[in-house]
Image (cartoon, rainbow, N blue to C red; front, side, top):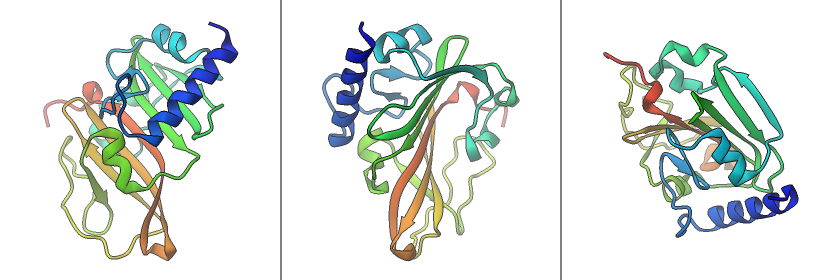
Length: 197
């Protein structure tokens, strides 16, 4: 497919996804985004759907706090990473693959997305991190639930599904009086989860 046409289709699909949380062709799921599915989609399928990436390299993962839930191989430079930069809604979309299968979807947002809309986008339940609630040591365990009365300048959220961990970075608004906006999300396959804990 012509690269220019691929980019036009790609940008239209992203705008549709953020405008409506679900759609008949690309339903929102914890383990998927824009026609891609963790543990299933290959590099070849991704390039066929989205076109050539801006960056294609081999590197280690950057799972943020979720690293405590993952196997040590996350630190090895064995993951093929495709990075897309030319989108109106995202500063960057980074897709990581292990053994040619998609293992992490990393979205850095350009347009404002309210944290309360995360459930509609990913169809998952999100919990706040910070204050009395840190990420538990046991993988796949939700933190203690609490009601926030003030938000720090930057804070995090986590969601857990059968196949995926989702980690979110947010920036508060109104001097800490409102949840603010989502800055970055990472959908990480539980194939990398530590075993035996």
